[in-house]
Image 1 (cartoon, helix red, strand yellow):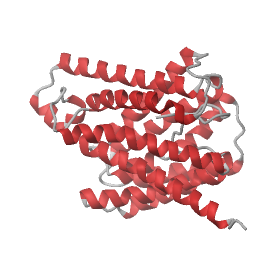
Image 2 (cartoon, rainbow, N blue to C red):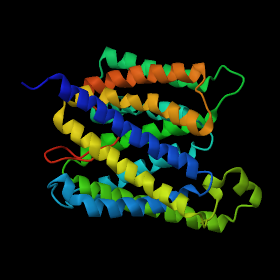
Image 3 (cartoon, helix red, strand yellow):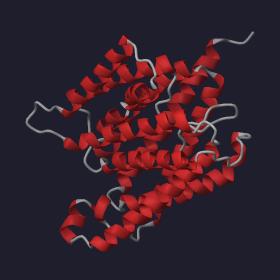
Length: 322
């Protein structure tokens, strides 16, 4: 007789493992942000992801090839995803991983809000309470009543908003497009954003003080050690491995039971914060993380909405990909 506890235990472990891969990805981004610009990171990462998607395309089973019915909407969705990653990564030099992650994990709350505004989806009183709870969590982290306000926390919140709009557009306008095509368009646009950023930075010729103050934004293309190149490539690899793991989990369990488990990410990133930078979340940051996790977890449970992007599997609607 099959032990019913075993599949559930495996599901929990695999979900936590996927979140650990995502946490490693974001940790490496924060590390390389001290050496290379976000444009250099964006370009190399996009090239690596495109290469990996091409090499592993057969692993995802048939997905209508590169079918792209709505190229305009796919491009807009990709621009929003590019904006989301851009805002999230730009906050890395200024915030701890815990702060940035907590703010970004308001994404499911914005998905609910924008789904109601754009697609006319119904939002009941329980979800309204969850939205208010998540907003309270952000306020607790920002501490607008305190002596020192951290405005950079608004960057991952903006990332969550852009990500949510991309998901809403995917639901409303990109259901006929294959996941492979959407991911390809997304990473091509990521590379284009990176190239524009590198060109504009070169034209601006920022002075040494500006580069020293914010190298992640103003630094030109930099010759770096092989270790840094490996870490940039690893950010793409860890994301795809995490996404594939989540795909497997969602294939074998109900989405409404899995999505809330993705908030285990908020318990993992403080470990990396402490091990690498010696940062321990403050009481207010920890409280805000708990409030956001409760609110987002409830919304995810009600909707079965993945907190993190995952690839489409055979027979599913396309969703946001790496």
